[in-house]
Image (tube, rainbow, N blue to C red; front, side, top):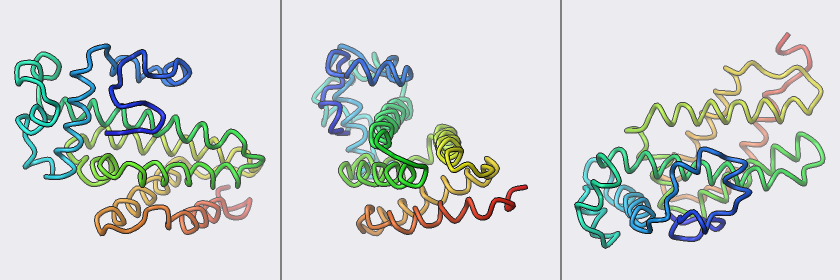
Length: 214
């Protein structure tokens, strides 16, 4: 798992205070012990390359260059390690979106900048993208929570349009559709960033006429 805004290692000192302050959920996932950081990255690599069922704790400890005992000191299971990696990855992804939308002058620009940042982050980290989009069935409850968080993000964006916001159920469909299209593109090896125009277009049309959601 590699992110441009958090150096490999994930130790607490390496993470900007602003990121931790704006996303408190990150703090419990970080540690000053580099073994945990390496194991998170190694688990993502193993699952991305072999699939969740085939990936093993042995793969993770080999890639992370730590002992099996160290793994079980830090994580109860393979699933627990993957879940921690998934959560941290999402927090970083959301932080990058937050930074990207700051210059937006209106809701349409905010929508485009947010979707662009989402797609760019996935394309720049193909291993995490595969785990986040394709191999995350094992953490499906966490994935559902993430989709609902994106639905609320869309609601906040659309609120700036001055029109009645679509129901959260509709925005959940939008978040699920974005996820599904990106997943399909990752599965086939296509370029995720090429989805920007279609996703923005669909999102804008979802707002529709003012009376659509009345």
